[in-house]
Amino acid sequence: MLNLANSLTLGRIFTIPVIVVLLYYPSKVTLFLACSLFFLASLTDIFDGYIARTQNQVTTLGKFLDPLADKLLISSILIMLTQIGYVEAWISIVIICREIAITGLRAIAIDMGLVLAADNLGKLKTVVQSLALGGLLLHYTYLGMDMHVVGTWILYVALVLTVYSAGNYMYNLHKIWLTSE
Picture 1: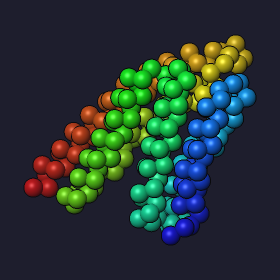
Picture 2: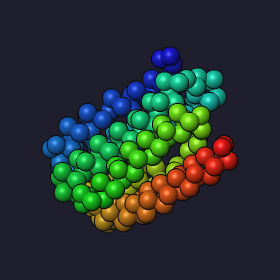
Picture 3: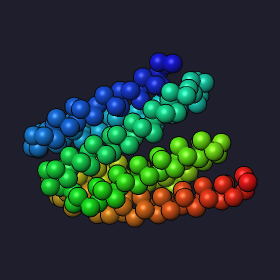
Picture 4: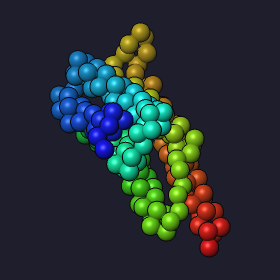
């Protein structure tokens, strides 16, 4: 159960408290460290899935932990960025509520014996959210680019993708539900 893929996922979860502590004391150094940890954690999301599939390490625990780790990481950073004033609260609320709602729908679907895998739109949403949070975590100007402004604009794109992908998920679940009756 505790194979390499699941260990990487757990590692992603264990980075969350460290990132949160770093964001409690926002400075150029702590924000850069938080962004670096977030980047490494995001890389584990790519590798844990790849390892699980190619090394035949797909487990029930991994299927549960992987999306949970993503949601915990993104939500924690959004909450902290809201707390320090880098993200408007309503944006964090919309994104976090979407994640909770889709998790609930996924649980209902599973209970009904339906499976709706993550689609490319949901994966794109996660990538764009991660890019936005990376820019917001860097916050300061680097190489003449105001990373806070860049991150904010990318976050608006992520917000649109977040809402659209939720609607798409609900539509696809509805289609599967109708065809399964």
